[in-house]
Image 1 (cartoon, helix red, strand yellow):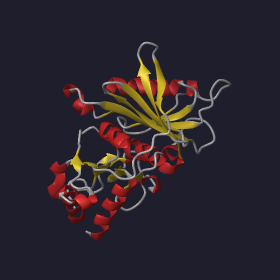
Image 2: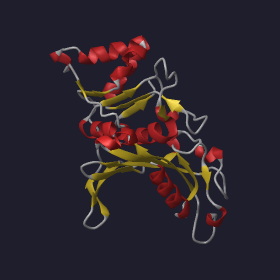
Image 3: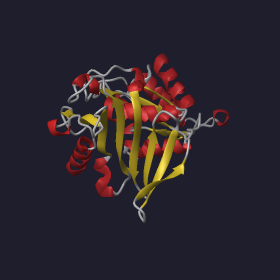
Image 4: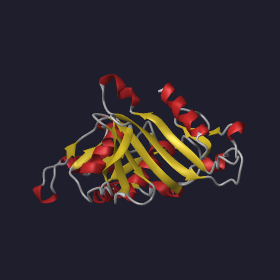
Length: 269
C-alpha cells in the first residue's frame, strides 16, 4: 500500500497539472515541489484526492480492490496548493473515477458528462472503452451492508435492514445481501446491476467510518452521473462542507429509489 501511495503521489506531482496531492495515506496534503511550480510547460490548475488501495485488507484473500480518485480545480491563483484548495464541496469536482483490480482491470470514470468504463487490454497496454454512458437501475433487490455492526445501529437503520429481509412478493422482497468488504468492489457491482451500499454511523463511529474526500465524494459524483443517489442519510453527500481532509461520514449510495427508502426509515426511526 505504501508503494502504491508513493507511485501515485510522485506521478501526480510531476505531471504538470497538479498543485497539491491529497492521499488517504497521508496526514496532510502534499503541495507541489518548488521545481514543479509553474513554467511554460506546466499549469498546476488542479487538486487530486485519492485512496491508493481501497480494500487493501483483502489482498491476501484475492478479493477485488481498487484505486479511487477525484479532481478539483484549485481556488488559489498560483504557486503550491493550499488547504482551501483541498477542502471543497463534492459538487466542485471536475472528474472522478476508480480503477478496480479483479478478473480484469477496469477504469470507471466521469468528467460530468456521463459515466464510462474502460477495460485494460494487456496486449497493448491501453484502456479501451468497453461501456459508454452507464446508467444504474432506479431500483434493485440488492443491499450491501456490514451486518456485524447491526447492534450498534439506530432503530431506523435496524428496521430498514429487517424490512429488506422480509418476504413480500408485491414489493419484490426479500432483497439479496451482497457484501464483499471492499467498498470499490461493492460499489462497482451495484453500479452495474443496481443496489444500495450502506455504511451508517454506529455507537463506535458516531460520524460514520468512510472518508468524505477520498471515498464518499468521488463515488457520489459517479453515481449521480449514472442516475443514482448518494446521501449521509439526511443530506446529499456532495453538499457537505468538508472541515478536514480525513473527515468521515455515513454513506447511503446506489439506486435512487433504494436510497430514498433508506432515508425514509431513518427519518421515521
